[in-house]
Image: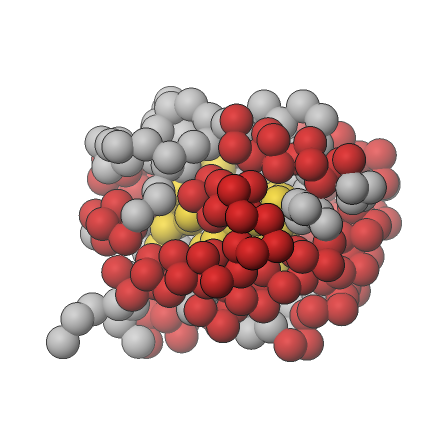
Length: 268
């Protein structure tokens, strides 16, 4: 089964259950790759529908301080893309949630676009999120990813003009990642202001699921945002737990994952 098929099958199952999807994020290699493997298992067992692994990068332009610090810790521990792909290959058979990589373009370009997509698909990666790759320059990666069966998941921001959306969404596979706020990642009080308008515009141009992220940290926020989309992404709140508790964070990460997922399940 290709990565595109993995994601499509997962969203079909979620829809059949009348739920909304929970996408969780951790920075791969923080504090080390062995710990990341345990975090993946904990989130999967706690109800995460899709798990996003961040490839650490020295200049993470879309990430706030919490994920920036996580990237620094991961790089200091020697984490690199090849090691992350080996980790995915090790855990893939024991994890039900599709695994998606979030990476800036430079590490993938340095690895080699074709080699990276081939190796990622072989390891069991389902999709790629590249926040600093504009649609106008995405053709080479999109082509390589398509050949490997990987979903390329675009980000759409509140500043994305309606006239630009068709171009951004044209090559999308898997789902659409809508950014709830203008700015960088990090927990916030108000994460619902733009999502209703933005998700409505996105749905005019695609039938793919719409998932919203940036700033979602509590079950209440997850429930509020999910009214306007097909799922939510939680990242900084989970990464903060890893930062604060290190190896002892497994229970806390699993607990928050479970709470967030419960908020996305209709209560009978």
